[in-house]
Amino acid sequence: MSDTHHLLIPHAASASEGCQQALQALALPHLDRLLARLGALPAPVGAKAIEGEETSFSPPHERVLAHLLGLPAEDGRIPWAAWHRHQQGAPADAMAWAFVTPCQWQVSTDHVTLRDPEALGLDEAASRALLAIVSPWFAEDGITLHYDQPTRWLASGDVFAQLSTASLERVLLRDVRAWMPHSTDPAAARTLHRLHSEMQMLLYTHAFNDARSERGLPVVNSFWVHGAGTLPAGDAADAAPALPAMPTGLRDAALHEDWRAWAAAWDTIDAGPVADLLRQAERGAAVQLTLCGDRNALAFGSSAPRGLMQRVQSLFRPQRFSDLHSKL
Image (cartoon, rainbow, N blue to C red; front, side, top):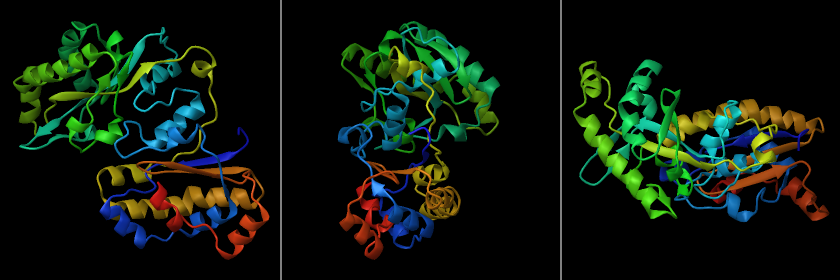
């Protein structure tokens, strides 16, 4: 597939009532023309890899990307942190790694909501200062923290070896209690649950947060672990395949359930990347389109074999996005 022009679109649809209403008025002429030219491709990693539920820890687009990279695609067990460290040129050393994102949990009577970490306004200096505060507590449980970027640290430790974690996109602005990590090693899950409690107590009255409050900034009172696991040995770790183009314009609008902005982002994608892929297809180039929703992914390609009846149907009953989005 190295010579194939591949476009992967995450958050292409949602079962949310607001999204369903937005879809009724959505017109995507370039996407419909492209779909009419393409045939369905088989699931890239078997049906289980791209078919799931809204409660799956790993969203469909992450499972598709994991397959393309040769990484394990088991739900909640894609070793994104170990892969990221390897891509940075640092040794993963066959250790278990995870991402740790400092965040704010907003507690109410019946919800514990994870607020958007980007809204914290953390810069590198503040993130490193926070890292220095919490690192000793993690170290007591054999977890070593490393700075990566303001809203994401790298962590290594045996606790992450068998841990299933929910993607940050899954839990963002939702009740964290439905998305807590679990493990085949009960002690590992208990360790993280205890660390969550300890961090909330430590940071509740810490001078770090007092200073933030005085400046009108949100406090940091917890963390989220995601992308845990061990990088497989061999070619999967070293391969650097050509990845699909992946527009992210739908992401923020979908995660914040701003369906007016989501529809506007779709218009932009249809007139941009989708129109570009359509032109490639019309010139005879090999193209692939992968649409991902909250549950499933559907792949289409110009190389997919189509029988005579399918070609006739594509002329008189062309495949449209309105026929497909409920399957995502």
